[in-house]
Length: 202
Ligand code: GTP
Image (cartoon, rainbow, N blue to C red; front, side, top):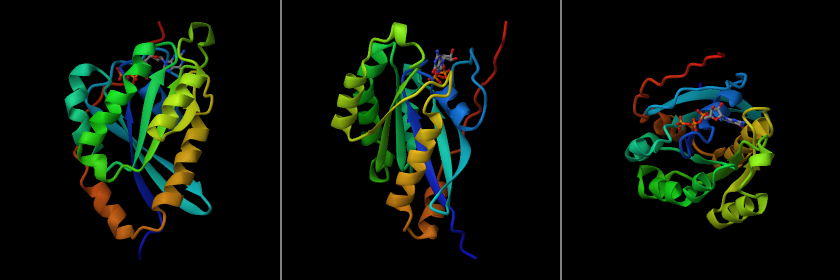
């Protein structure tokens, strides 16, 4: 029997410390962790979602934000259909880096499959330290053709709405594809490297 479930690979990019791992853990139903080890390589989680009675399996990839891992991004982005580009509203550098990260994706093997882009302005709970305005975020999103969200992995603001929007647009954009193509796309993923995720409450 052919499965009616839509499988979609989502790749998450952004500078180190912007909150990629924290957002993805929230999407997976975990509580906020105040201190997380820096990501190494890449790993993914599966988030199951639904839109208009269609089951959707989001394979959400977390990539390491440190500059030294930049060269491996294209390999881990292979066959991605959706990109989440994340910056931290308290870091102008992380905002300024988004176009370069996008170029890295567009030069890589996912350039043929990527169709949906999300620009995520994270850490909106830190309004007192904000240096990147909503207007700047919306302007950049408009320039790169991305859907814009302001999130906080800390208090959960908009995290579930991001998942809902990705699911909705994925069903609209890829929902009529042959399930055989879907399987082919996910089967080619490289093995994830082991990633450190621990916390300490001290
Ligand atoms: P790399 O693994 O180095 O690429 O970083 P990352 O982008 O995955 O960031 P990570 O999720 O590890 O978060 C970095 C730090 O920011 C951690 O101390 C988090 O607890 C904190 N953090 C993440 N999201 C938020 C948020 O929305 N608000 C606040 N206040 N802190 C956050």
